[in-house]
Every structure is written in structure tokens, then in C-alpha cells.
Image (cartoon, one colour):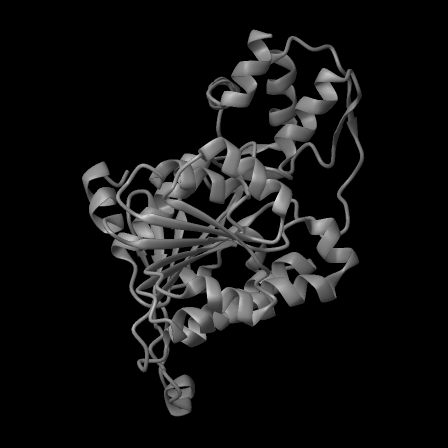
Length: 342
């Protein structure tokens, strides 16, 4: 974990912008840094969520800016005088992106490019973009657009004509975040509905919001231009998750298997074996280094790696949580604690 003294130092007298700042990541990051000696700007297009967060935070150090990353003028306005950017704005729901891939492209690709260009134009010091396992060997629109987001960021990072340091954090399911499977299962249990799972053997990485935030802090501290940081995370099967929740809530609900849906993977991949060839392997995370080809096409065809290919880093070959450990993880979630106490 990044120590608190470093966090205080890096944010001291800085101005921070969080795109998509009313989401799960943004609101958690805001809580982490709101009492530090810094100014924070929450940028999003949802005025209701902004109003709710503003009422909850009640801090003179936080400005709420209505805007959309699709609108270059609005993000450029919000970026003026900013030192650090956390880019979390995105369309993240797989079904929505499958039904409306043009909208996913407008936000995740074009909108992200607007953010990166605005950061360069305003001499932002550091920008950390949030990515997902779905960007690795993508099979759905959400993953494809997030993969393109990564590629656009890396293209900006290769250029030496600006001062902004770009890096990426890539992780799997954030436990109990909006749109994740846990709130769905809990809602089904509390309303005495059948628990619907896709494939009992489907595996998913699990990372807490605090761990996701800490990975961003690591990227801020240790990231060079174009680095991709991947948290080494444990995994569990969908069946494990459902069964552990029924035990926690002492539920007798039946589990119904509905089959794998369009755009879903049975296992998640956070890094390909090709990427791991160019990574640094730390105790808790991988750091994938950007290639240094610049625009030299000759190097692209003449220079590579002679290392032996490893296997992909997936939810199948990472640490598999036991049911005991998984239940402990769930019982540490504040929302689940509150529900159990009722």
C-alpha cells in the first residue's frame, strides 16, 4: 500500500480533476483525498448524481462541473490549471455497449481522446486512465472501445513534445461497484427471487475499491509515460460467489443457470503473454512498459523480444479464493454489513 505521507505530498497544493467523478471510483477517490490540501474538480454529465454527492461531501475544496468528455470545449474548460487527472468517465455496461456501439465509441474512444488532448494542451503533470480486463483480447464493444482508448493514450505517451505523463491502470471486477454481479445477487436474495448465474465455472477477478484506488496511487508514484499497471488479484467462480452470498444471508433461494450471454467471457484476462514479455513483475502488480519505437517503422520490423512466451494472466490461473476467504471478503463490504445488521 502507498503510505499516507506520500499521498499527502503528491496532492499538496495540487488541483485534481476526476472525469466521471460521480461513479463508484470517483466518489471513493474523492473521499480519500477531500481532506488533503488540494482542490478537486468533479466532472460528469449527471446533475442528479452531482447534487447528491455535493450534499454528502459539503466541502469548499470541491467544484462540480457539468460537462461531457464528448464535448472538447467542456473538458478543456474543466482542465485549466489542473495538475493531476483521473480519467474514469466511460460507458462500462456490456449490454449497453453491445446495443449502442456507436455511443460506446463516442464516449470511450473519441471522448477519451478529448481528455488526453486537453491534458496536453493545459500542461497537466500526470494523467491516470482506468481500463478493464475486457480491453484484453476483446470480444464485445465495451472491451474494443476501451482497448482503443488504451492505444490512443499510448500514442500520446510516445510523443516527447509535451510534459504530461500518461499511465493506465487495468483491473477486473470491482467488488460491489455499480453494475457488478454482487449487487444483482444480493437484490435477488433480498427479494426472494431465483439467483441467475451464467456458467457455474465462469471465473472473475475480484478487487476492492480501496485496492483499485491504491493501484492508481502506485501509478502516480511509479508510472512513466505509457506504463500499464495491473493488480495481481484473486478470483472466484460465479457459483462460489452465489453460494457464499446465500450462506451469508442464510437464504434458501435456488440458483438457476441461464448460460453464457453474448459478449461474455468464461474467464477474464488482465494481461496477454505477449504483454508480459515487456513487463516488470512486482510482488503485487505487473507494470507493462510501453514500446520505445516512437515513429521509427524500421525498428518495428527489425527489433523484438527473444524471451520465451509465458501464459496469459487470467482468472483461471491466478489465486483461487476458498469459500471461507470469499465470505470474509464479502463480510468486509460496508453495504453488506449494513444489510446483515437490519
